[in-house]
Structures are given as C-alpha cells and as structure tokens.
Length: 434
Image (tube, rainbow, N blue to C red; front, side, top):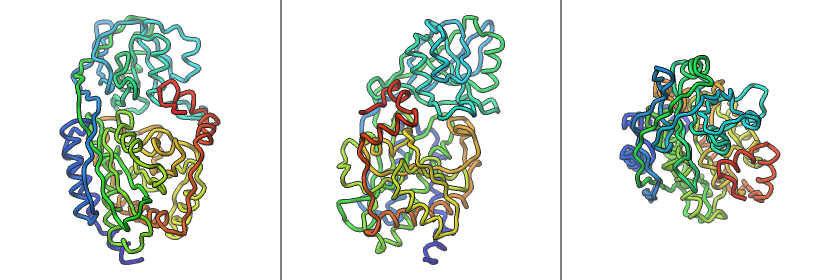
C-alpha cells in the first residue's frame, strides 16, 4: 500500500491539470473554453494511463453574457446577469423578501414587482433553498424581475443559472448583486420603481462529456465523475476545477493499481453542469442504470481539508466510507440525506447508488463559489493530494467483488425527498421526475 500512497502524496498531476483549467479562462457551458478544457482533460486522462479516452458531444442551449444593470432612482447599481436569464428590460416596484423562503412568497403581492432575495437561509431553517427555487416562486407569483443578493461580504455579486430542462431560458430577467449592493437597494429603494436590464446572446451550442476506462473490461462499472464547465465570471477553481483535478489524480493512482480492481472504473467528466446538469442528464439517459455499481461524483472537493460525502441513504456506501476513514485514521464526514443538485442526481433519482463528494469549509452556502473570488489561490496542493488518496482507496473498495451495493427503489427516493422537504422545491423548478 505504501508505494502508491507515496506516489500520490508527491504527485503534481492533479494540481498541474487544475492550473491548466483555470488558465483557460471562460469555461461556460457551450463555450470554446469549455471545449478546450474537455480536450485537455481527455489528454490528461490518457497521459495517466486510462484507455478508450474520448469525447461525447451533445447539444446545449447557449447563453453568452452581455451587460446588465439595476437602475434605481438616479443610480445604476453593480450587478451581473444570471446565466440563462432572458435578454430583456423590465421595471417594477422593488420588494425585498429577505431570505426568500417558500413562506415569504405566500402572503406577498408580487405582481409586476422586482423581487430581491438573499442567497442563504436562516440558521433555524431546516434545509437549503436553492436559487432556482426562489426564482420560480417569484415567477409563479407574477414578478417582473429577480434580484439575487449575496450573503457573503466583499462586493461579490453571485451567479448561477435559471431556466428548466423544458424551458432552458428563464421567464423573467434575473441578476445577482453583492451583499453590499443588496443592502443599499433595500434601504433606499424598497417600494420604489427599479429597472432590471439584461443583455445576452441566446444561441445554439455544443458541449461534451469526457470518457475513459481503467481496470478490467467488465459490463458493470463504478463511475468516477466531476464537471469541467464553470461560470464565466471567475476561474472556477473550486467549482469545479478541483473536482476534475481529483478525477485525474485518482485515475493516475488507479491505473497504477489496476490489478487490484475487480470492477471497471469509468471516468466521466461532464460538460454543462452549471446550467441544469445537462451533461450528466445526457449520459444518464443513454446509460443502462443496471450496469452502474456506484457513482463517486466530485463537486466541491478541495475547498476544505476534510471530505464530506452525501451517501443518499445507501448504507453500503456509508459503510465503505467509514471503512476507508478508519483504515487511514483520517476523518471523513458522511451525510445520509439526499442532495439533488449535482451530477450524481440524474442517476440517484432512479435509485442508482451514488455519493456526492464535497468538503467541509465552515462556510454558509457556496462561500467563494459562483463569485469572482472562485480562484486558484483559495486552494492548496496538499488538500488535492490527501483527498485523492482517500478517494482512490474508496473507489477500490467500491469496485471490490466483496462490496455488494443494492440499488434503491425510486419510490423510496421520492418518499425521502418528501420527508426532507425537498419535493416542493423540485416541483416548482421542474425537476420532479416521478
């Protein structure tokens, strides 16, 4: 065991690939930068010893940023458009709904208004309310425009897409503003007319998934995944360059341990995650779910030194994680709840065993993610190396013949979503599949 660990702990392969990704620049879904990042990832996986490395292109709704503005009184406040916002201008009375919880929308008269909500939820609230959920509550209430206010200080307007699978372009213009701008708008202009303007180019585009195999040529496979796209306003280092760097680093370690694998490991680095899980949805629709032993999806790794794994109620996945943590005497947090907001979900929603790999940051919400501050300086090579070692061992554990992982009935997934108060939000954003 010690030889491969030493190699992994001194390897620069993953970190070098992370630097390659962030230096590309704009990796927005469907962009030339996303394509170049996918091609670089294909070459990196081939270089570490993976086989049958290839790209799988698919169509995606393209959206290219122009300018945006929030005009209030005689002022123009800094903002950025939310991807897949329609390109249009509206004016309406500003209503500050605070956190924008479902109950906040119930009694508010929002017809024709511009609604402003925060990017977080209060400490007492029992679940995270996603940006798209808040957006579609506003749409349903008849709002004319949507302003998404960051809760993180530092003059950082947040981004994040709107739209649904059925209607990729949202229904009302949407912008992100910083915590500071949001506070100013709420203090000075609540109840006053404000104008939200979004200029964007909406067009056809192509994205692509990267595929590669390691280990025996079995029909069944453990999927090792991440996404390579990122929002166009920053380097996308934590979200999700680090996840793709870890996939490359783990693939390098697995290729050196190929004779220990009882099951094929299939690497998939998805495109177009940030605009509605399009790449993973494309793959899940084409893949025989019965051939997937488990998914290990890396989206949020590297931002903190302790791994945090959502195991989605699959007891065997939690047991395997605990086994690895004890074997290495290294902490790993496991969370049995469901998490429907990354590339594992198009499979897990149908009962396919899946883990969402993140890390403990101590931050509320996304922290630096989805802002200008998602840059390489927030990350450390040692964290990428340490987490790659743990995840390599976890993948080997899941691929072992001695590890039997039973799928879940989709009805039990649906029931758990209801019990965890996630179902209502999924219905309003068009993500309820049952």
